[in-house]
Image (cartoon, rainbow, N blue to C red):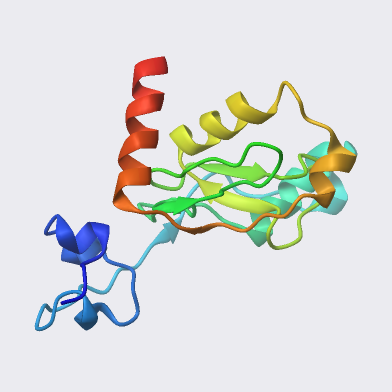
Length: 163
């Protein structure tokens, strides 16, 4: 028998994001989720003169935050890239738009902007800001993958102890 995903194993079948959900738990009806974008109205980037602000405004247009939507690093490891990628959260919701592994706000290409929760955002910056080198971080891979339940729980416990 196949092991269920983390969400299904805990009975939260409506939170399961696997396409073939029936492999984890047959005969469970999935709920259809819809999300709406939140935040202040976005200015036209051409009306903003500060380059960093322009980059952030462009990122806001390209990557809107969806209220109630799961953090993009939820249930994953090797998140954020850089010298010290992190293990993502267990159940965070999108709250921040994160530029990384390269923190340059003008770098808005896919894979460098992520819609993540507060905990993941703080964890990545706590691990990476002190040794950040834009040239080096640009060369390092960003390859998130599914984390095991043990990796998620260990990471969560470690960060709860530190805070």
